[in-house]
Length: 198
Image (cartoon, rainbow, N blue to C red; front, side, top):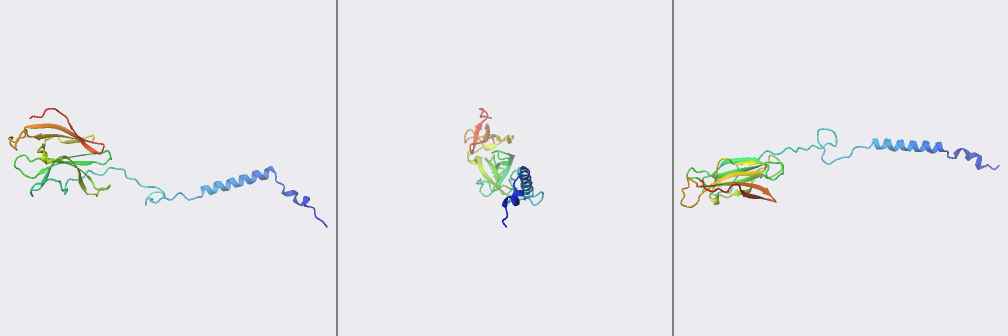
């Protein structure tokens, strides 16, 4: 007895409803698999908070402290003293620098001042302060009067000096108002007034 293939295979013909049902089932499986996948892992996940959260602290560091800094002055062993200081963000990195007016620690005459910029050696509050720029070298034989300040990233100072070697060191007879500002990788000095005599 020979069996016919046609009657036995009649029930396996695909119908439109069969394809729609299969497509709907497959779409459901794919959607469910997408929902059940784990979140992406990161190399630096925070210990607290939800998985995948990274803690960022963008608050500025405190201004560098002048205490313990070795300033480049030659004072013959008598030490140095910081007479003025001001802080502000000078280079636009959102962390303040400290600008210090420093002289030899002597009471005789009017010792010349050095003006130095301090920053931190690293990117955290525990990093040691260091001198990164000299705005006024003591060899210029000038001192800094009251009114020294940092405003909007600009260092402002009134410098006192001498018109000749004959002027006593106690009594500077010249003054000039100057500023320093960070431009293109260095501090640029500008004269703010033309008058030079006291």
